[in-house]
Length: 626
Image (cartoon, rainbow, N blue to C red; front, side):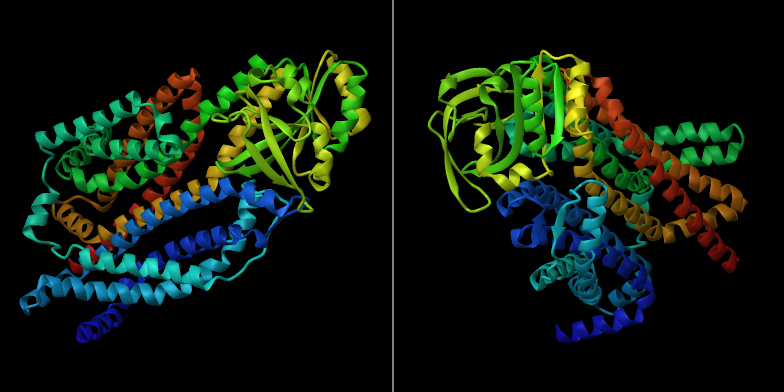
């Protein structure tokens, strides 16, 4: 085993040029993964996180959903990095096919060859992974600034960076493991007759049937099953199953789309048009590899956005249909809200303040709303399910949380560490505000939170004209917003859209970067096959311009397949979600379209550029050998 490790080290040094692109790929994914892990680790330590005017307990609670997003993003990074590392190492193995065949002839067994490559990959992961993981950990601070700039975090969030050796060790260990496993299982039967026949094998009727049936089964399952039964897991389950279904049927659509593109090209260049149609039908699975990365990217991004739309739409409808407020004042801090409350009270008996903070209990984290309880109950048209409204006051609270019972107790703490035990004395139904409702005077026990301008305070009022509302707002503070009931409902909807996009933009960006890297790896790994193809076409008298046109046409066909199937699946997802939520399918679909088109155009342009460069490189290599 020691001798095998020494041999692997010597071979790795001898193949430095071959492993260069592989090392770049490993370095990029390691830096991204390390930065993500470092940011998550620093955010997990409340002692390192500070928000102006907010207690450490509240900061910790506020970061729980953000850490969940970062954790999910970390899982995606892990899956994509495994694929990229495996693809990069397989690419190197393909380029060393003759050397591997010689080792076989020398008596090396398959296990020895796999172990040899695994040792090489292990050493590569070790040499590249350690510095990349350290660099990536320092990149967590620029990443935090970027996320703050796009609104993922608030401007008042400050994180003290702390280098964590265990975090670096974890990332390096993971990268080394991925490299070693990828090296051991990398395909070494490259260029064999069996593989060549498999590459040009037409898709069989049996394959068509089982792929269609399995994709239909996934669609029927997603349409028939109650997604709420999966709890929060459905947000992961639906994108995964949608992507799997698209990948199953993608090879069936590539020949169809390629034939259409070939016929279109054939109007101007008949020979190239026919070539595009014929080659795509004989190399279905080869070309479907180019469609897989964009399908994964567009499928995940689009499905996440489509799943979010009905929630924001229902939020708008629920508030607009249930609220009795004619005017809504939005202020920063509670001082202005108190002034508005006093001024409106002189003109209308129906006025209520509401300010939200996060608290935790034995079941998780929830919202605590400081409100003028009875007025808020009437203005928001809440429904009493159980208990007495008169019992709510001081530390007696009402709850609209599903599963709450009369007598539930929750302990909260103020900035000075003083504890307050809240007791649920009334159960409410409120489809917009889910949490505990405590009477407004209790806010005086939380002076820092009351003064903080990081949390908006709303004042709901009924019985005053729009002009009166504007006059009251201007007399208090020029920065106070005044909205109608419809305006506030749209405000809630838009805020939900913004928060959803901000919460996912980091994930979308990383997925897009990983997709582009995957396409680059696929283009590089196709070098041998592309060179042979160029050589054959050149021997048949096809000029360089037509060879380039042929390559670009095949790329365009695979990317069009990825877009077409993604749009069909998103239309299905939008219909499924809108049917359950009784919202508009078209509105949901159009909400997703801009981001999908931006991602697809970016992927298409990148793929066309790298395909052009790769084809030029292959043609130069062919001409040198002529």
